[in-house]
Image 1 (spheres, helix red, strand yellow):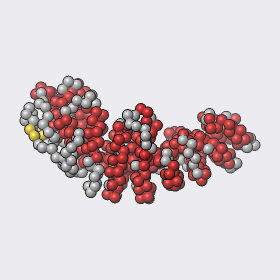
Image 2 (image 1 turned 90 degrees about the vertical axis):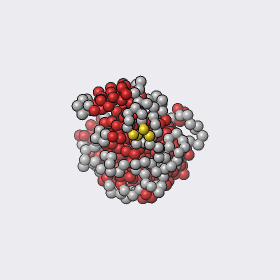
Image 3 (image 1 turned 90 degrees about the horizontal axis):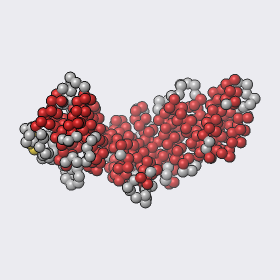
Image 4 (image 1 turned 120 degrees about the vertical axis):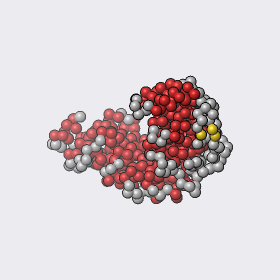
Length: 439
């Protein structure tokens, strides 16, 4: 299977490459151009090691082959690529070895081998029947490792497969997402072209797995841009107009919120929640997008009722609240109170025990709300203390204590409001409540 594009220019081409014969191994290469001669001794040693993968420790074999590659990189890569084409049974293990070999590459891989590696991995990722998911994952991981030294080459080739009318494959999108996680700053010049290409394909994306893959890219690329915005001084790219990067996410965000929120598949819903959290925190930087962002908060809070993705919901809210608090972006009164109520209800609910990480994230969200609007938050907690319910009172007191412990500059002159709230419980005879008051 070969890529369908016929583009031939640039560092990595998308067109079909001519077949050739390698002179030392007497085997025909299925992809790519001729590479340099492979030493017979290297070839025989690597082939012998690969032949014993079922009998010996695979990690030791991989380490031995990686040691050989320290001085014979091109020869070892050539052998591994040949075996990837011929040995279907051990393809995953061979990819893992190739990935370990490429980790020590310093950018000296010759162009023919580079193109051949990219093409072969892409073809295995894009196969619909022959390749298992394990092979596709291994091929994708190899491309991510290869991108450490040849990022532009890998990205250029991946972008060739984001062109209608043919729908992109799932693992092309998964690889794009993983590239942004591994090399966030290197992705910045590709944000516009990547998101525009993805947007042009949205009408072709109808099944759950592809939508999950799309959401994964949106989540991870949003995080990459957010990282850039907070660390731009470390990047080689100019700061002028950096917030324009946010604009490229709006069409995708609008499509997801308009068309995908009614999905019922749990895994897709989780992917949507994670993507929305990342995109909302990014788009909140732009004042003209805020009303649209605030409209989505109610849907996000509604997902707590399903009790399936509670941590991811909380994490998405925390991303939004971090930007709101850090940049002093006020939340509308209605949305602020709805978030307070939802978080409070999650903490004090006795229907299902909270995980440690979700409880910590919920309390973190309360602290972030204290940065955004301390008076409104303390007033909300004070109102909850008037409810004669042990769990509600204990939760409210513990959250007031967390706010005090956080010692935020925003709450420094609001301590009297906290004292007033706590005093309102002094007449409560419940033993658990009294312990919390003392604390």
